[in-house]
Image (cartoon, rainbow, N blue to C red; front, side, top):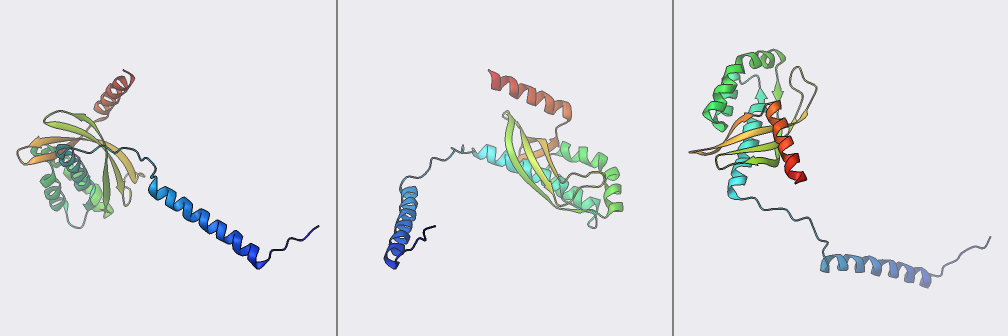
Length: 180
């Protein structure tokens, strides 16, 4: 087998070629940026509605059993419509029994994924929910939900989570529109 030898001069030239090639690639990238996917700009209405969907969902899932049911409801109702607040209040006692006995302390991170349906006074948003830990009786810490937000005199407010039949109807309608 023949042994390869490099002189200092040849090693320097090889290193110089590698460095110049790397610098050329970096300069080429700067002068000719890659086309990026166009991200549509949301209107102020869409921003406000998506923010209401996120904040209402987050308020529902931010649960600190040590602060009590009333504090949780007050925070949620501040983000929600009157009817949404009333709906949650009807089931709050039953929910809170589970939370208090389990000493629940859950943080929620919510992200608006997409606007699914829109009218002048209502919007449906698909949201992604990540919980710091699963709720009692569940093993899920990540979930998707569809939420209805309503335009009120005070701006966009969270109203409620959509039920499974409503979600299926929306998905089927979207699929029909996509195939047309």
